[in-house]
Length: 346
Image (cartoon, rainbow, N blue to C red):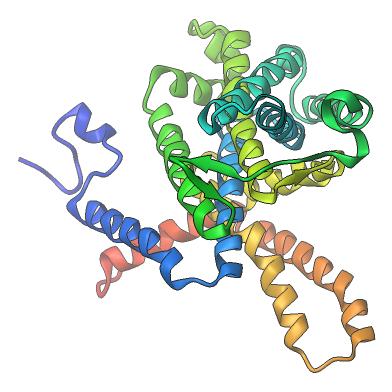
């Protein structure tokens, strides 16, 4: 006999979608995403692709920071390595798209494991500062190894090709970025149903106790860095194909802060939080930009309000963290609980 929402088996308790309602909404969401590019404008599709790329990178960082408890400010460096790897493979060797993206992820993964070595000795703010070094080193490589990276001028990347089609518009790139984003989210969701994912969570909650219970800290921390960096590398490869040009300035430290803020605002330790945080961090500045542009202001006033828009965006993040520290994912859970019980109240 089933009581409330209790599950009859371990498999049922571990299911990603444990009700027919969830499965129905998943089908509706999938249909909407498939239909979306046929009704959206080119600018909206551009934003959609950018959001999807940011979701992949944010999900990777959430695996490291939200689930394993290791703070990193090197996500932009790993994205840069992935972008340059894909660009070099494409322009110099003409290798297939899938191989280029896979190579981008592997190169970033190896770099992430190297950067993760200090994680056994340092953590928290000290680890975050250590990961900043990754950004400094990669920027130096991108800037000064001109024979390989093009130096300050960067690399112009030809359009991606898939099944003979040239992906030279946002509409066409959408069909590459969307499936990869779905695979990244599905992989992350399934990861934490495995022994490896549970070990990550144990390390986050109490690393010393986890080690006492037989979880070797260094291998699992390096594994978390590897998975997170692989996600960032693939996102960087998509970034290169999407913007068709990369330079050392394409991956500044502020980009790493952007992704860390997305993890915090969306909700640490939740896959849904990665999606909501990436959407929030990407779209809110665009919405503020549109709001300023439609106001009846002179051109000088628009220039003056441009930095104010950035300040408003920062203030929104701070206020959000003060009043909802668990992130947008917790807001969504409360909304679901409300409608689950509606019209009855507890």
